Image 1 (tube, rainbow, N blue to C red):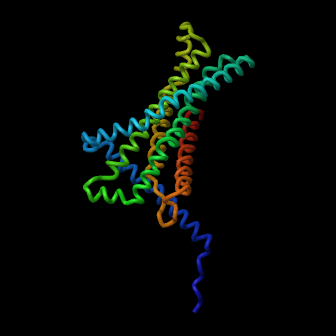
Image 2 (tube, rainbow, N blue to C red):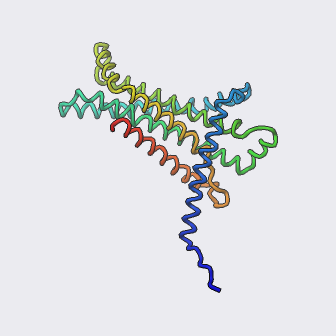
Length: 267
């Protein structure tokens, strides 16, 4: 008999990696859809569930808000001074406001917020969820009549979304205030021209793209680290390998959202 040819090791490894990639994205989409349905269901907001949600919202925002606001204000102040001084030296001061708003408010701050919330909140929460799965806590909750998606995942994901939106709003407001103070000082005569310049940048299309980008950033930052679970049989469930896989998927999605928003704004 003619022996059956063996599949090369590289081909089988590529097939396993491709299957793992597809399985991971399907898990994120499937569980994310479940969480979205639960978020829209009134039964998910019983009195006990509201207490859990409020506690998670507090944990996701209160420890991060003062530090990130101060850090974003400091970074924004440095960037504002650099841009203003550079445009003045080249005689292009009339473009300083638009340049600052487009680069700082529309692009840099939302991206910084997404990465900050991912590192400080959703990544640690995702590790806790993976540890709970490994210990069998989800199966225990199922047997006790609970729902892991509603009782554990929904509060964490909702808190992550709220944290990104809140920090983005606060940091962008602070950046706009600092921009005005650096250009006009503590005087009110430039307020009309400043609001007109801001309004010219924030056209309806730009506002829509900015809001959609912030929402998609918040969903990506909240869903991927918390929902995605590497396979146990590949030894990726614990340790740095799992964290690297989660970060790779998260960075890929954030980069894709940023590229799409840039295309929508400038093309």
